[in-house]
Structures are given as C-alpha cells and as structure tokens.
Length: 485
Image (cartoon, rainbow, N blue to C red):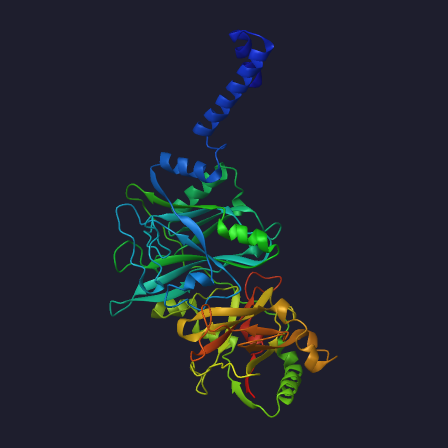
C-alpha cells in the first residue's frame, strides 16, 4: 500500500485535515503491523527467523546465552583450567522435544529453572542458531564448539572437552568485529544449514555475517539417548576496552538462541570433518634465550642466600601434542577445552615429564614464585597473552597477570639490555604489599589454601595477522623459581 493510496483512503473517509492526519498515522501503523506479521522483514531478526521456521514446519525452542566467570566455579568440582582473566559465555539449551534434559555429569552444572543445560545432546537433523551481537571492543573474543562428554568403553560418561572446529574470533570480521550483528549455526545437516542461511539472509543479515560450525557424523554420536554425546559451545572474552561496557554486555548478552528441530524425518547430508588450520609461524622467540638467561641470573643473584627451587614447566610444544582434539576424540581423553587460536604451557611437572602436585606456596615473609619468560604479545607473537595461577586440585584459575601488566617488569634486572622490552619477571605471593609486578593468591575462594598445591598456566592468543595461535615450537618455555628466604 503506497502513500498515495493512504491519502486517497483518508480523503474518502472525509473530515478535517486533522482527522485525515490522524487517519494517515493510524493506517500507517496498521500497515507497519501488517508488514511485520506477514513478511518478517520488519520484525527483530531472531523473531523473523523463528516465524519462518515455524511456517516451514520446524519446532523452535528458546535457549539462553549466559556469562560464566570464576565465581561460577564455586559449586562444581572441576573448572577445567579456566582463564582467570577471561570470562566465558555458555549456550544453555532445552532438551529436544519429547526428551529429558541430559544428566550433566562431571561438569556439575545442573539444568536451570527452565530445564536448559550447558551440555546438550543433538540429533543430526537439528541445529542450534545464535542471533546476536558480538562483544564491545576487547583484546579478544571467540566462538568454539566442543564435544564436552562421551560414554567410554566401560560405560562411564567422561569429559572429553575437545574442540570440533577451529575457533571463529574477532579476526573473522576484520573490518568491524565489535558490536556487530551476526548469526552462528551449529548443525550436522548440510541441508538445514543452507535453509537457515537463506532465511537469515531474507531477514537482512549479510551472508558474510553468518558463521556455520558444520559437525561431522563420522566423529560424533548424535541423538538423545543416555549414551549419546553431549555438546557445548564456549564463547571467550578478554580485556574489554571499556570495563563498564563489557560488564553490561556480560550481564545481559544481546543474543537469541534457538534450538531448531524438524517435526518429521529429515534427510541429512553430514558435513565432512573440518580441516584444521596450521598454527602461524613467525620470528622465533629463541633469539631471546640469551637475554632470558641474563634475566634469570639477575633474579637468582637478587635472592642469593634464600633457598631457590626450580619449578619445571611443560612447553607449549609438548602440550599441543597432548591436547590434540583429534586424539581426544579418538581416545575419549580429556582435552580441557583447548582451542585453535591459543597455545598453552603449564607446570609444575616432574623430572619424568608428568604432572606434579608438590608446588605449595606458603606465607613466610618474602616467599614467592618468580616467573620469567618472553612477553609473547610484546614480541609480536600474540594479540594477548597471560599467566594464570591455578588451584591444581580443582583445575581452577584463581588469579592472573596479562601481557600489558607484565611490561617493564624486566627493566629492574636488565637495565638497558636490548631484550628487556620483550621479557618479564614477576612474582606470585600470598601478600604482595606494595610490590609492583606481583600476583597475589588468596587462601579463600577463589584461591588456593596454604596446604593446597597450585600450578601455573600460560596462554598466547592469536598471532597478529592470523586467525590461529603462534606455532608452539617457536615459543620459549617459561622459567619459574620458588624463593624461600
């Protein structure tokens, strides 16, 4: 209906100019409502998609996207090595129509008050669709789908937490990655993915703003029986440019989450197993080994007279072999939520190379761990990097220091040494007092009790100019000394 038609109708109805104006306004509002109800283009995008799917014969259920922070680790026995300086987003889904919510298992997160779970089953002909905005400006964000748990050969459900595809992070939307409206589809069905994409484009969303994580039937056990796989989606966020804006975003993540289920049998062509990108190569940090030797000698000299005990760290190269998603999927082993755009090193390990649980940090005056290494971000091998103190028994990150906070920490030891700008030396203590470059570890939650073992984890996220992490073989292993005066 055009404006000319509205005018003619208003004149036909008669009355004063004022009445005609009111009629035009009323008819315009009715026309807007008519367009919204019939075409969907004027509806908010998620509602328009829901309406199209309902007309096409799908059952559509609402899920929710909710932030997960350190405090949310309190009720669960294991936090899977969470990053203490990086909150997460979890997708909570209702069970498929006519089925029960899956038992959460070791994750320990029970269903919410509407029966939605953070670990969910999925039929091969179903899809999960996220329609929403990316985060405010930040150092980093990402999406990555996981096989969270699986029933092993002994009939026990165990955590696998292996990624099913390379992460999609802010580099995917290089021109304007923040506060961008996007859609993310998770499905095993090539046919349903194509249909969802058509519907989303019809709502006005650009095809380039639609991300598909295509799942491969040959790797996974689809269905809603007790022994079928449980899936999970993790969003990660780090270092919002405006802390208040980031806090507001996490408090109410602006996204609609839909579980899409066909009402009848649907043919499914599964996606192939995705090809993973090679980790990004660049300038090897090995050129800084001499400077790091000098830094370590200066640290030891400063604490001459104290008892110094080396803490062995497992290299990023070794951990990248241990936490290969392909191996975890094949062997039903735990990959601890690894992701393609991050590499990890961690310790302590024993002389035999196995995990050690003997590192206990006391509260004697001056007792500390001195942690030394290459600042991966300063050297240009990471967009963002950090060190996290872990409660070893609960695999829970409790405190952290980022690459930005580490900068300048080597200067007091190295002076004008040319490598000082790329290195760091920081302390981990129970009471930092006024000491700069120090991470304080509380004894109460979230922390590590005086008699509990702790550990350290190091991360390097997204090599600049790439979408994946730096190649782990090109990173220098961190050095840690336990100082007991």
